[in-house]
Amino acid sequence: MFSELSLETRRSPGCNETCSETDFANEITMAFQPIVDLVRKEIFAFEALVRGLDGRSAAEVLLQVDETNMFAFDQACRVMAIKQASLLKMDTRLSINFIPDAVYEPQSCIRATLEVSEEYCFPKDHLIFEVLEGERVTSREHLASIFSAYSSLGFMTALDDFGEGYSGLNHLLRLRPDILKIDMAIVRGIDLDDRKRSIMRAMVGLTKDLGIRLIAEGVETEDEVMTLRELGVELFQGYVVARPAVGVLPSPRLWF
Image (cartoon, rainbow, N blue to C red; front, side):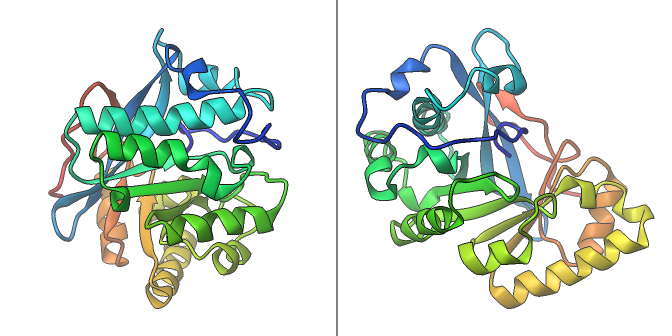
């Protein structure tokens, strides 16, 4: 999730204008939360989640973002996430949230990402770019073009909070993501809800047929983990695995 919250976005000023990631460089930092593969007992990726350097929450940081500075904010988050991941010697995938309407033109707006990736020797094929399924965008075709461009550059793409938005299966057809993160509303209490289990069972089969990796996010209890494992889910993210942390890479639970 984009720092665990969604942001209603509008069209950015454009990648070639004067706004820069340095506008936010002294205001934000990143917390990292692991995504684990409980079949292979290993870390699959870390997600970068924005925080304020002054202790502000994600919600408070995002309140400062609007159409005048969303490009600068989006670029700052990308650069900050890669720099900090490299300095923390992250050797797994890194998942970065992005604002679709801050990407004026995919090939141009990715330059800073590629440059910092090269500067800090962070493999670009370890980068995952994710967007909320319910994110409001100016053009669905534009979002699809971003996913296509990122895939062609060797990045993985992810659709977050699937099941919370209004697009549903249409998004799978248009975007063709590598990864699908099931909304926590479906995950929470799944051990006690037959209907949720039926939905998840169907999603496991669908994503397997489509060659998409499925992540259960927002998992909070061992009973939820065990139920999801029985349904065939392999990748997990949530407090029961590890909480986000600033300045370190949290050590997750890999055994349940």
